[in-house]
Image 1 (cartoon, rainbow, N blue to C red):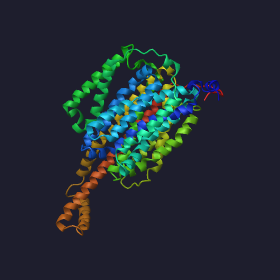
Image 2 (cartoon, helix red, strand yellow):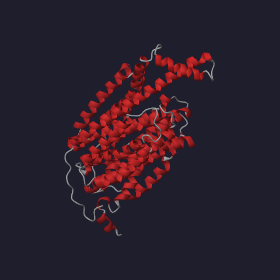
Image 3 (cartoon, rainbow, N blue to C red):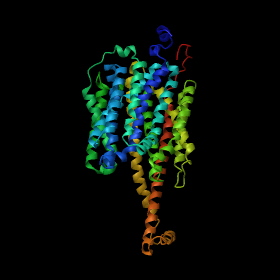
Image 4 (cartoon, rainbow, N blue to C red):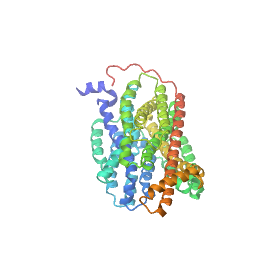
Amino acid sequence: MTTAAAQARYPLTQGVNPWLVVVSVMLPTFMEVLDTAIASVALPYIAGSLSASNSEATWVLTSYLVANAVILPASNWFARRFGRKRFLLICVTIFTVASFFCGAAPSLGIILLARIMQGAGGGALQPLSQSILLESFPVSKRSMSMAAYGLGIVMAPVIGPTLGGWLTDTFSWRYAFYINIPVGLLAVILISRFVHDPPYIKNAKVGPFDNIGFGLLMVWTGSLQIVLDKGQEDDWFGATWVRWTVAALVVSLILWIWHSWTHPNGLVDLHILKNRNFRTGCFLIAMLGMCIYITIAILPLYYQEVLGYTAFTAGLVVGPRGIGSFIGSPLIGFLGSRIDNRKLLCGGFLGFAACALVFGTINLDIGPYTLLIPITLTGFALSFVFVPLSTMMMATIPNNEMGNAAGLGNMLRNIGGSIGISMATTALVRRSALHQTYLGANLGASSAVLQQKSAAIAGYLGQHLSPSAARPGSFGLLYSLMMQQSALLAYVDVFRWTAVLAFFCAAATWLFKKPKKYPASSPTAH
């Protein structure tokens, strides 16, 4: 095919088949999301290898998230200043090089520095990829492109725990980072070959960098992540440092909003929030971040902490979610241009809420296959949430604002996810203590049921232990069972609250304006 014919057939991608662009930009995005899930599984092994406590090892995640959140809104300015393709290549290169240093780190300090570097490189990958995809297809075909993009976003956190557990158990936790190197190299080659900057990026006039806005952004995002990560350990507002950090968070956030709204060349243009669909989408994408990250983080944790599964086995059990996403993504790509996206989005949230309610019926007798169907349907439902949500919130955004909108939306999703995980973790601790108190109050020393069960267990233990140790041992086993039951009830509470949140999101989808009916594409549009 001649160059002129190729450009006539694919005018939006300068002669490159847009599906080659999809593969090129989805690779680094998949790599970035996958890395977050893999690193969380390897934390205990990182702590043991680097002589750090589990609490200190959590900074491996926190340092990455802070750097990631700071770069997300700034990605639009860097893309305009250096060119979107060049900036994407720089980010992928930084992320890949930092992955090597993470794997080779000899101490906790070195790996934290490498994770900050990795977060800075990975922060812009999602908004850059999303804006490139949206501009590579005509409006009537965007649902198909976002379906392919959503497949990578939704499946990566599912594959991550299983792959991370297998790599860590079979080789070393360092390979959880080394695996990014070949993927990053392939992404650089594909982006160099198939991605091109649109004319408005090449001819863009970029103002000076907004140092004040960037500094305020660093302060409030950093304060938020520190409070979310360490607040539970020190009883939240019971600690003086938490109150001061929250005060710094509130003040810097208000100043950042005011500065971004009034500054003509601000790092983030918040005037885009005047767009009703985008404003609604920002709210829902933050809620989606809470829902999806609560489920992804809590369900494997239940299998590990309550039922005693290994990390690898727990990853295998929740793996069918990826099968549901794999089935749902092409289907939503087909239906997205034919059915009102609000209906698809509402149905996706309702399906997710129903699955969360099923998770809220768990007990101590479930096996690896008990939740197979609801776990699979969760992935299917999420594909019906992510794609219509991304399509509708960006449908009325001009192309020259895509980068700004994508950066702001992805930042809100990450922040929503961080808040959701922190809320779920706090709820698990506190509700477990509450249920333990309630159960213990009904098991007094004179309880006939307690005495009967204790005598039965002591009779069994007496066959293996001395008679003097059998009675105390029976009470120890009963106490362990009560702790296990208390933890179970706490997980049930969290799953049910997540279902309520998803039902609320289903109702909020109707705040979107009715989408326009796009004309059928011409034979040359792809």
